[in-house]
Every structure is written in structure tokens, then in C-alpha cells.
Amino acid sequence: GFACSIMELVKCAHLSTLHGIVFELLSAFITTCSGVFIGQWPDAEQAGFAFKVAFAISMLQLAVYGTYLSGDWPLPPHSWPLGTFFFSASWGLDRYMLYSLNKTLKLISEFGTAIEDMKKRQGNKEGDACAPKSKKDQKSENLRRRGSKKKDKNDKHASSVENANQKDSNKKSR
Image (tube, rainbow, N blue to C red; front, side, top):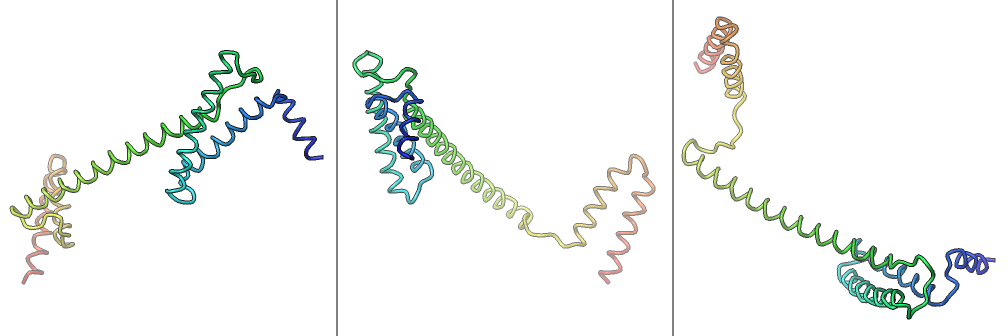
């Protein structure tokens, strides 16, 4: 039943020799170890161990592939060290992600330092510039902005809005 179907699969993949089966099992094991390394599963210590195992077996697979290329090790045609390729790609991507993470963390810390410096400079000049403004201040600032934009088009309307806003603020302050 099941064993016969596995053997048929092995024969269809041209893995009739023990060398070919071992070579492909190395690829499968390397890929599994690389998956554990990438996923950091179940914890970082085991992922580090998985990396070391995948690296060592990748070197073994490359040595076997080198002997295949020289004709000393019989492998099926079209054999490639796919496990080693997968491990190399995952290792390279992991290094790139760590580089990007370190670069991002450095930029975040520099940005935080720059914001603190700006707050200190503005704090010395105008008080705390990042403090929330009152609704009244926000409305008058918005009207002032709108008024300056509309002065070109409707100079009378913008000035009347400003005058009305100023009258309202004078009444509220009394």
C-alpha cells in the first residue's frame, strides 16, 4: 500500500540509487532546519542550533554535489543542491532583515533625539510648541489662514470674518 506508493514516487523522481535518496533527504532536512531558523520556532536558542545544523549539512551537501560533478558520486540526472540554495537564500534574507531592522532602529533613535532638540529650542522661544492649543486659538488660526488665502479673491469677506471673530473674542473675554 503506502510503502509501494512511496517507492513508486522515488522511482518516478529518478532516485533509484541510495546516493540519490541520501542527497534528496539532505535537501529536505536542510530545508526543514532553515524553516525552523526563519520562523524562530520554538525559541531563539533552538533556532540558532537549527541554523548551525543547516549550515553544516549544507556544507556536506555541497561536498557531495562537488564529488557528483567530478564523477565520483553517482547521483540521478538533474540533481541540484536545492536545500543548500534554500538555506543560502533564507540566510541572506535574514541578514538583510537584521540590517534593515538595525538601520531603522538607528534612524528612530536619531529622529527622537532631533524631536527632543526641537522641543527644547522651541520651548526656550515660545513655551511648549507641542502643547495642544485651545479650540478658540485653533479657530482663530484657521480663520486667519483662510482669510489670508481669500484676500486675493474676496478681500471684503475675509476682513469681515476676521472682524466678527475679533468681536466674538472681545465679548467672551469681558
